[in-house]
Length: 80
Image (cartoon, rainbow, N blue to C red):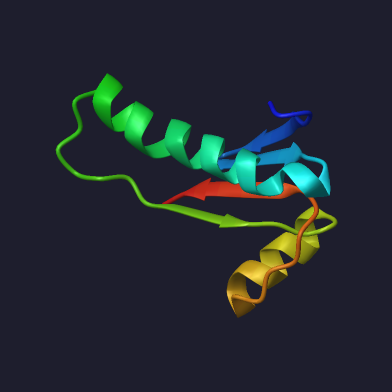
């Protein structure tokens, strides 16, 4: 994954470590895989929604997600 790696899967969340200069590319890839790819693979009639936030650790990314104020440094992705 663009110089990064998946380091955790918890329920409907993915935690990945990604170099800061590759976050935009990682977000694009993760969003595609968790939405368009799955929608086509399973012929879903309802679109999937993905919320993405990032921070220097899990707690920071979760906090940023709630406040909608994002920083760059690891990616957390959640299907809802």
